[in-house]
Image 1 (tube, helix red, strand yellow):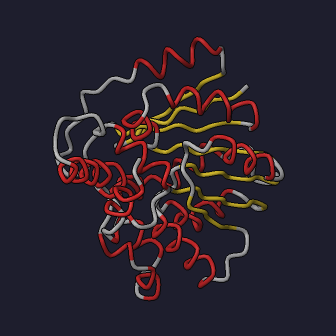
Image 2 (image 1 turned 90 degrees about the vertical axis):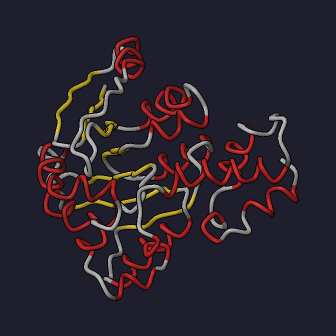
Amino acid sequence: MDKEIYKKIIEKKEFSQLPKKDIEKVFLRFEKREVSEEEKIRLARDLLRKIYFAFGSRKLLNKKIVDKKTPEEILQKHISTRERFKFYDEVYGKLFQNLKEEKVCVIDLGAGINGFSFNFLKKYLDNFYYFGVEAVGQLVDLMNYYFKNRGIENAGAISESLFNLEKINRMIKQCDGKKVVFLFKTLDSLEMLERDYSKKLLEKVFPLVDFVVVSFATKSLISKKAFKVKRYWFENFVKTKNWNVSSFETEFEKYFILSR
């Protein structure tokens, strides 16, 4: 991607802290279209908004919201975590029921603002570290400001592209204890940018951890209507790998637990 085009895309503040690799992936979708450069940039920005900014209030781009709102209130400012909010106890209870006294490292890939669910996590884990990986730099700043502001030392987040597999793998290897990877409502976005990339990511990450938790949205919070999309590609892929898989559902989300 041309440097000048990249500069024009990130002139918009909302895109200024996205990983360059992700912006390049998006622009590649439109690079060969027979339209003007301005139109390509507009189309790229529209897709970036759809993937990275469709679910959250603009207020989340300012970390000072942490000074005014509780973590529970902030979780409800983002559609993804708002849908999960009533079910955090159920979800974390099921995921960590046998790990209460274990040392655990939670690696949250495509975290969004899920770091604000820290208080729910600590109900079920006595000795753990939460590590969020999120493309949107402003959301990473928001989570890290919250951790620092509340004196939380066993948590942190970084801005990184999930397409940077080597770096993701290095980060996972540096974690101590039982390793659990979250991919909450993340795979659909990855597939929008590169078909079958989710499979590549899972194949690289799975051997390094104790289990991976993948979730997909099943219903709209606003309309209450179930999504018609069936993700047979995912279930068929897991079957071909012969991984152990169990699943459960909440009102808005289906979770798959992948283990050896």
